[in-house]
Length: 199
Image (cartoon, rainbow, N blue to C red; front, top):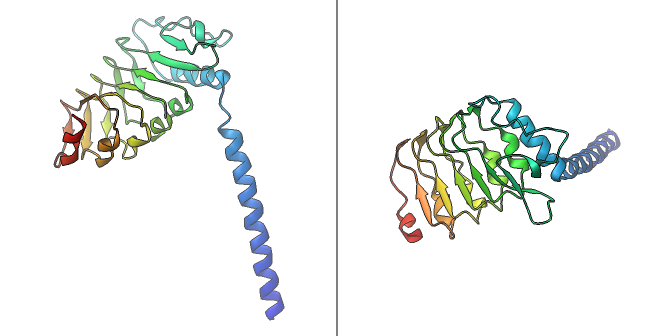
């Protein structure tokens, strides 16, 4: 009986190791990002939103490089998308979670649209992000608690949305932050005292 129990435990251990290796390999494959995945991400985002005028993003053709698309900029060597400016296009729809795949993004400007829903947690995958402007939309929910992962942020503008909940303490860890605008939301609770250290 003891040997059967021991054998079962051994099988379980082998299964766990196999699953662990499989999941690890799947994860590595899923985070292999490139200009092609940038293009797929942006085109998918376009397909899930409506712009005014409707042809505002007409150059976003899946058969061309996103470096040639309007309101998109790539790095010096054209290898990855670094800037996306969709401000003032009357865009309605959610901020798509796939945005987190644009891992070389430095500037994301979505202000003055009609974006709804929440700020996706995946936005904290944008570790090179310096400017994040989602002001004047209809974004709801909480500010991502782990936004401090975006350590290079200099400007965070969430003004005039419908954000609720408390101001995350993590904001105080953004040592490069120069502008923080949270006015015109439904935030509650106290302002973290250490935010004053950012000024």
